[in-house]
Image (cartoon, rainbow, N blue to C red; front, top):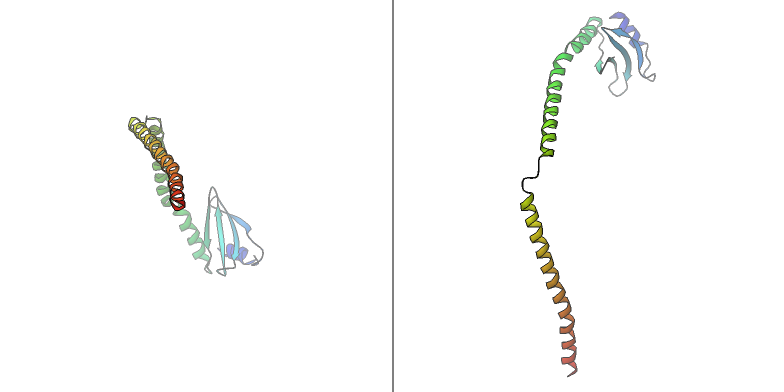
Length: 144
């Protein structure tokens, strides 16, 4: 505990993160957090765990032990989430290979939509060609 605090306090605020040793299979690196004005340590193995250090020699060791001890309890919900995601992925893979159940209905409605669009297009063309005739008739009526 004393060696930990001594090593951490040797780190200057502008120095950045510095490796200071190993503990229970985790590499320990420390740095000064300028925002919170405190020293923090990273416990690195497969993942990284960050802790704020206090001034108590034994309290820091207890804090590190508690953080490492809680890894298993934090890991279980993550494993469940991964299992659920895999289950959903398998379900989605099965669904994607199934034929579209409403395909006939979709094709019928698309066909009807095309017919309606064609009718609207014809109606629109008729009205646009008849409008200039109306305008010509008005011009002729004004001249008369």
